[in-house]
Length: 264
Length: 190
Image (tube, rainbow over all chains, first blue to last red; front, side, top):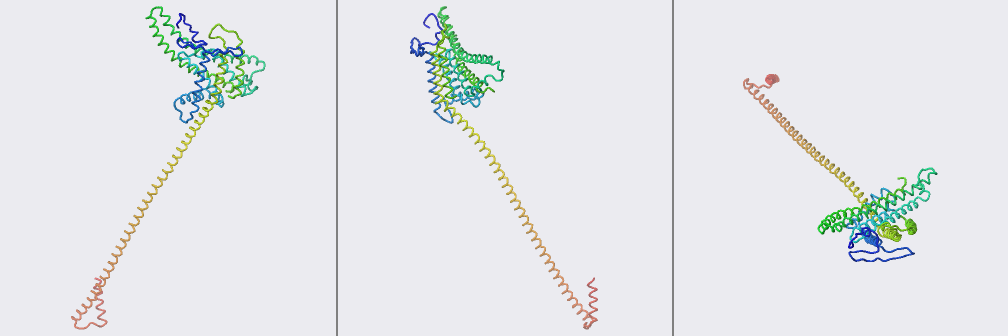
């Protein structure tokens, strides 16, 4: 914020530097097969989220006990909630098969969201490339699971139930559009939600710097108001972090259920 | 989710990412396509999924199943035990009831026996008393009779002697005796 212009997009966009106060830590640039594979800020924060997940969940799974306590109890309760209220109603007997995917989606998105709330952190899920890739991964996983489960004939049958042959091209278009829309919905919802909160906070935090030009007192006065609002929005963002991870997982479970259990 | 499905998904996703890489750039920093980031996302996610599946989610699912099974068993066991306890209690209650009845019966029987014994003793005593009484009466009667007879014979003797003295002769003939007897008989009747 040292310059006279506040660049909000710069703060939420991906970058090749970690910025902590005035220290800038450059991240390594990589190029593989002519592709830019640089470790950007968002890649780094995805890795931090992944590392946290590996540490937490592997250590939790090791502590086998009939009476869970502490952190294990906390994460287990979330896992069980996802299993019983998100996966089971849509996946029925296949719940345990797809549970690892749903749990990974939920916690990965949640951890990325929460890392973005930490000062100097970056929200990987506030990047349309990341959310888009996750949504496409979900879609591909759903399609391939259904294909492997029902086989080519069963898959087509599940896709278009009782429809005369001449309608098939149209059904194909509708189906493709439908899945495109579902993927877009997953990707854009998560991206926009995570981005919006940060931009609103940034906007409110910019106010005192703008009002500073009317005098120091006005700047500080507006600052108190801005910080109060930011705290409130921060709380909302904390909630949204959980909510969006849940929504993504929930919709993935619903789509999975639609594809693997077409009769339901 | 089988390994096959994950592997197939990876192939599709990487193919997609490389196709996507050829697309032109957008002006906005937020919407700029970045195939490197997409590939890193896929790698990170798939790696995370595979490792967690093997070392965390798999064991966790098993543990959850095991625990729910354990709890279910325990609840069933507790219910069975409760049922058994109820049955046992009922049985013991029945036994207690039975014992009470038996005790009551014993007491009743004892009472009846005592009553019988009492009755018997009383009866015996009464009978004995009756016997004694009748015996005494008989004895008294006998004694009275004897006394009467004795008295009578004495009276006969005396009256005979008296009459002899008055008549100054012996009353020994059959006729006399008959006369005396007739008088006495008349006398006795009165």
